[in-house]
Image 1 (cartoon, rainbow, N blue to C red):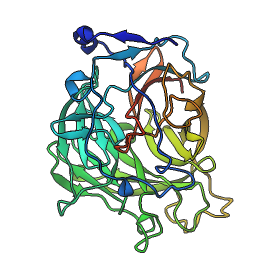
Image 2: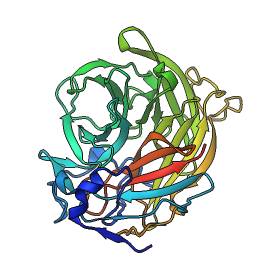
Image 3: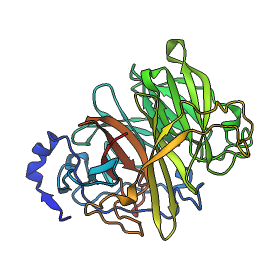
Length: 381
């Protein structure tokens, strides 16, 4: 589809729009988040000096020099369509902080979007223009950086943030102060303390309906479980906004894929992203509808290998993102669809004519060969 250039003089009009725009190339990193090399992740990513495209080196430029794509008819599958994509944030900076490395998205109570960088930064984005409005640095109890991957915002405004190297979940105030740290089952801790592998732990995080419980998804299986069988851990709310360990469930991914994100629906079902990478081929990103409501509580199950009596979380494929129209996107490395990149974050932002409005974001790993790209989907569940 031919791209239409939007002149910078239309920036004010775009600021009032509610749809996404798109510009710039899509890319993939053969050394990051791969099925063949799943441990290559943020802990080993090189830190590079923030760079920017000539016309997009600050947040003020995010609405300029973009291209738009109509929503109608852009079907990825019978259940999913893509409206637009945006590369406007790619290789930009805000307040001296690189805008990118995004691993999670969440909606805040004021309607803005929160975007979590796995380099210990939490951005607030304007929900309409996507321009950064503020950034808060995050750290652990000793002031050290996190490998921050999952994000949920509680009704009182506190931020629940995972780090996948221990793993951990901490509660932060709006200004980045640590309020609490949630307990983690010993089996899900990184070896030798537990059976998990660093950088393959808590990637997805979501509050369940009513905010009474929290759910985190492991990215890959722990030692002793069948490959592709990942554990979803829950916590139940206690007094004072704290959380205690709850039930645990098992979810089976497609071969070679991991789980980078989950989002809860109002009825208790989940949207689940599965993602992988194959060198020379590109990214695989699939969106599933999953139902944990009749799954077995696996908190007391030592091994998820050969357990025929364990009821897994049921899942139904909604779409493979590779089947979406490319909308004029380009890629500098091989991809099944040039629209694809290293998609890690997902948030439900509302409804549109009975369909969920779902926003995805890719993690560019602060790598010149990848793109920070946002995707605007409509999903029927």
